[in-house]
Image 1 (cartoon, rainbow, N blue to C red):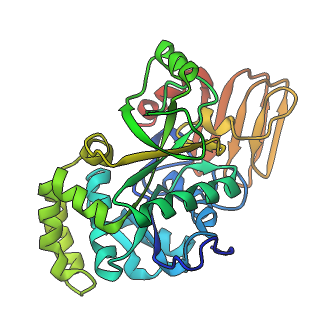
Image 2 (image 1 turned 90 degrees about the vertical axis):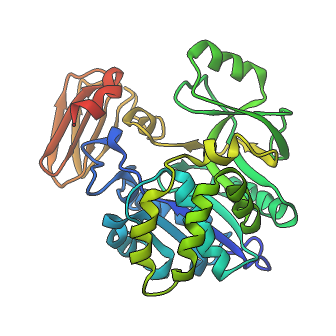
Length: 356
């Protein structure tokens, strides 16, 4: 997590990394025991959660990083991110979606730094344009530091994507803070084409920026049940009783996303949109779009992968095996441990059920 600070005077910047998902669509590489955020999916020598901390290095001191994850993944976080203080690795006893996750982190940060300015980010996305990303986040942090506002990061769409949610902005402005008009669910293809042509619709990256007072107040307004549980938990925060009380209280939190809980209700939402080379890496196909390919459209990750007569294939070998593939067109071939997947890219939406 090295790097220069774009805003060295803003030492109240905190970064919360949400790392509780299981990434089932990237089976067999991603499994419930070691999900995708803890794996070197791209074959670059860094796991996705490590790449996430790397891109925030210019913006946040190492001691101000927080990770919210499942209890079973705490040791993975400690191994991969040893600079993060142990009491800032927050272990959910069970997943309750993103609103309780964010509430827990926010109440803890408020106790430690009441003036905190916070970025919340998924652990498992990819951002290729890291310098542009740092500038974009710095603009958002400067905005929320001075205002009672929430900023969400939008991604300029490069295609009519049906797999992402969209943010409808009041104006088609890039790199500037613009009021959000509406959030849209994943569209069908015709609607996605219309969004692309309109120019005021951006992919929702699930990255949020706010000061801690704003998000706590918004959660109190729109999710009073969750806020009440966090208030009950507060006396035990940073004490030896925290884990016991969290296990008792957290499972009773309403299971709801931050999008439904706050973002779609609050009048304080702004978007800053850029082309950041972003992908959620939610499927093998989305990973393939971010890989270097040979003249036949093939991409490989592995120590010894050999392709013969293949086109538009993605072969991922997590081990030291020699992998030879011949004559496939449009296939995923992925192996990890004792698991092997051979699947047409056109059918990858079924991988979750295939691996069940």
